[in-house]
Figure 1 (cartoon, rainbow, N blue to C red):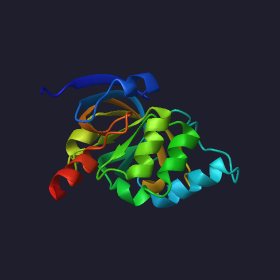
Figure 2 (cartoon, helix red, strand yellow):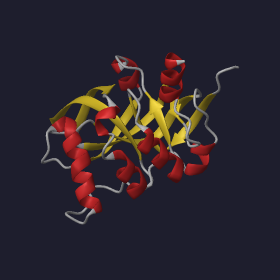
Figure 3 (cartoon, rainbow, N blue to C red):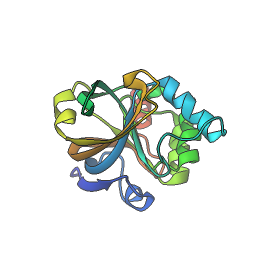
Length: 191
């Protein structure tokens, strides 16, 4: 079976997410949001509970677990490199965030567990797996920093909205139909 590659505009819509199948490849252009920290995810949960206002609109956003080495300069915020971080450490909070913010694309490396798969299926979302160690490729896709949220946090925990062009390819590792390549591979190893 041939691998399908899709060039898509982000943030990803539920309709576009549902056209993708586990194993497909995606090249992204448009707007994404990146963050790498569990404290950020807990703070987002607080926003859902009304503890504080959101620093930016994340409804329907495409949010990725991409760590960065960034600097604040007099001219603004500069990302020197992006690299994926492990998503499994966010398993406990992702179902609520996915459903609460209606995220149709999330990702990083390492995948997400079954409750997250079910949340993605419910909202029409996918998990995109990034090449670990691909910092040069990921960083070259950045066109500009659009906005930065929570400047009171450590730089790599902040929410950063980016414009990207031809970011990827990334793998659809969990599709909007409940298929997880991580589960498929694990099942094949136990047979």
